[in-house]
Length: 145
Image (cartoon, rainbow, N blue to C red):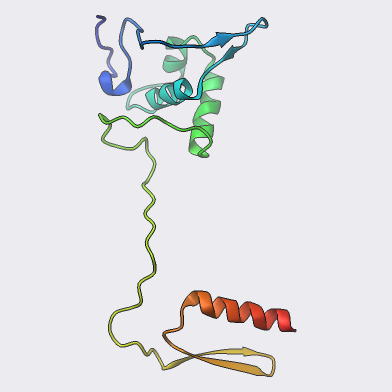
């Protein structure tokens, strides 16, 4: 087994270069086709603290510009990065949390009503009316003109 490099196991690299079965197909023109999972692992490795794009690209026998393109695709969400349990950070990306809107606690009347005025039409709604319903009414009033 090879010695660990400075990146350590969390960077996913070993001095021997052994990563298990790796299938990179090279066409007649010399262009290689990299599987998405391999691209993700290489990008993840380039995001490790202390790693450089040039160094990672050199280790994998590729042009630094290609790795930069893959990193851009990952930032745009067009290239999935593998989850690594050893990482403390999720590759620099923030987690997305979706919750349903909760009605405000406490008194439900803030001035008692909401008024929508569109020309000569006035629509009065209770203060507890949801934002989605208010938007629907506003759109309906706008299309009425």
